[in-house]
Amino acid sequence: MAQTPENKAAWLSGSKVTPLEVGPAPYTQPGPHQIVVKNSALGINSVDWAKQLLGEGLLGHISYPFILGEDVAGTVVEVGEGVERFRVGDRVVAAAAAISLNTSLEGGFQLYTVIREWLAAPLPESITFEQASVIPLAVFTASHGLFDAGYLGLDLPTVPAPPSSADKQAVIITGGSSAVGSTAIQLAVSAGYEVVSTASPKNFDYVKKLGATHVFDYKSGTVIDDISAAVKGLHLACGYSIGDGSIDLLAAVLAKHEGTSTHKVIALAGGQPGGGSIDPSVQVKFILLGPDAAGPDSVVSKIYNNYLPEALANAQFVPAPEAIVVGKGLGKIQEAFGIHMQGVSAKKIVVSL
Image (cartoon, rainbow, N blue to C red; front, side, top):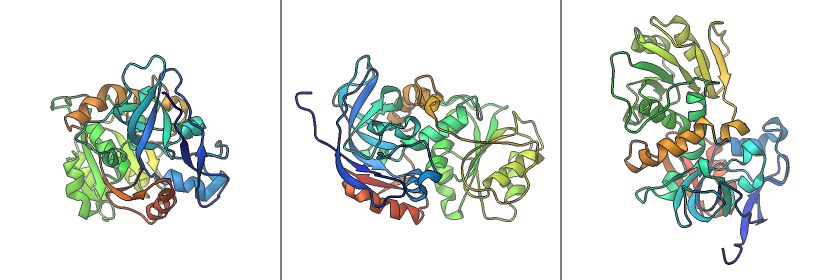
């Protein structure tokens, strides 16, 4: 680049410090297999405001000052050595890996972010930056939990999805209207699995449109029996848990399942247990997004490289849930935290730049 751009960031300057401090940040040139993205839209995730709120009680490895933010969409302005998938001017959606790697130069809440080539996908013109910014961390979390051998180890998604077969396997994904749930459903369906999910009744149609075969009210007193009946006789691969109380629900269904099972494992993306006892035959694994999850050989990399480009281009995978833009500029991120903390349903809070 002829002239180094002036960069700014929304800094978390210390433990539990509020508000984020908008100020100068270094512009970092890309290393090998890295790109620099000029961000146009940023997604907000609960981990962002939770880190600010809880301080050392969450992500204690992070050093201050720090730039949070995982969801970016924008334009490539510089490419590093060895980059073959992208050129300057390309529109991209990408996962910023600052939290996994404890490095602010890869944080999303700034004007220019260094991105690892394998954590980005080309963005079709038909998808806006704001729509795309709901995707990255949800894809990161969903794909690592669904497909990594350390968690559920499901088959990877393909374009097109595998044809339907008589021995089709089922997976239960709770919290289907959440950002991670919306993504996990689409990925599992693209991998050839029948998906059973939970949501509020007002979101049933939305979750089914994403590909779920059955959706049940997570607050219903009969939800365990309802899901058990839906998967009876099927080969039940496993469960993916999103939302308070969903661990107990999934454990009960897996323990009493009338049919074959791959293994009785629950990948836990978020949510508190309901307080009941969990059958000892069921294993719960909390999804940790460490450095290996962001590596070039990770399943996340395979999704960004081998699945998302074509799936986004032909709408086999769509940005979901709906992006709600709360303002423009880095100074709006703190306000966006407050809105996100109040809770959203089948929506994702986004800030434009």
